[in-house]
Image (cartoon, each protein chain N blue to C red):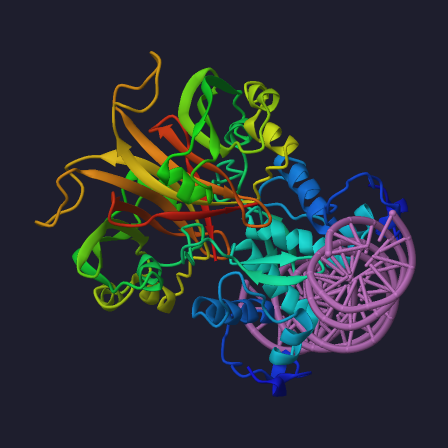
Length: 256
Length: 256
DNA sequence: AATTGAGCAGTTGTCCTACAACCTGACGAC
DNA sequence: GTCGTCAGGTTGTAGGACAACTGCTCAATT
């Protein structure tokens, strides 16, 4: 975004094509700033430009810059100090995102500097089970799409994921398109956009998880059992993801 | 806080006693609003008063109310919808806080409606190990305080916690006061105030964790391995907390 | 020389007012 | 009943002002 955008109303913004709600400016700036930080433009511990500087850089008001700054602060990415400035968090390491943020696993792997990959084991339409009906708010006759994927980092399997999506309004064409690319990308296309997830964590010791010959000996997994919700609060996915213990750095940034 | 506070400068606020930095108004309002929500004044899914209403209730500007609202939103407690209002999140269940928020475990247990308790197993001053020196940024000759606690909910042990605090400036009197009350309360008193924690999660299967006869058969634990930092980024505690699998609802709220 | 304190410039926190963008419900035209 | 229009309320953004805080300089003091 260039300073030329200054004083433009939203009516004249770059991308007016979206039918649903447009992205708020504050969020846009936050994502842009996050990108700059993650890419290393500002060293850990160093000070970012002042709020008024950022206003000029992006051609927005201080209200908007502050909205973005506060968002980054609650993500634990920066520390805002009254009277002295905004500083890039410095945790010694280079952890940039934890599981408290709703990002796809492949995205997280990529930010860690590894090459993510997905191997589909099953894509199948079937009736919903009782538990799935409850969790996804479905009727007895509703169908679901049953996905089983192995998620890899640098070729090594780091997690087995069992995902269930409501398939009531899903065409066979769409179903098959899940085999290609990120699951979230395909979900995006058909209007299933998760913005929140309520997850439960468990330690699991089982030999029944996963498939193939890369299955770990130990059978020890960290289970992320979660339901994804869209903006209106409708559940759009129910996933059980088993992370192979020791192969995935499962980080949480806890803030006050 | 009454509407009478309106237009007062901070110089005249209710509690001017604090020597260090005072709590920002936005945070105060956020905590107050959170309290009202958790206590059930607003039902899940229902709308909160509008921003201008809240301005009048608390006698602050809309900027401040918005700061608070945004904070609650990033905590996943409310959903702010452009043009229609702020709504209490409704996840079907009554989950109010996840581990992405830095709260003491006992506090979390209390918010779940259970009675928390702590049984100390060991309080000991000793030399820091290599790992502890690294994690806590200590010198070779520095001492640490070694705490071992069992955390209970309604009398049942839900976690074993191994905590290590830098003890360089700790008097014997302070050391002994750890046996009483919450660990964080005592830390507060001596100026060790954690505001952030970087945690790693692991699944653990071991018979060497814990003590006493309430130790679980399975030996299956969820390990929260974390370092706490204060406002200035100094590490103030290093904890390994082993949650007995199945006895503690380990929830994460993931947001975008 | 070391310490203290006042002052100053820069930065974030809060306030005020105004308007844009958006959502909901009411109401009438069809 | 369906659709478009409109009005009113709500959140998002703008701009300007001042309060509160931090870090620094530098003179006064010890």
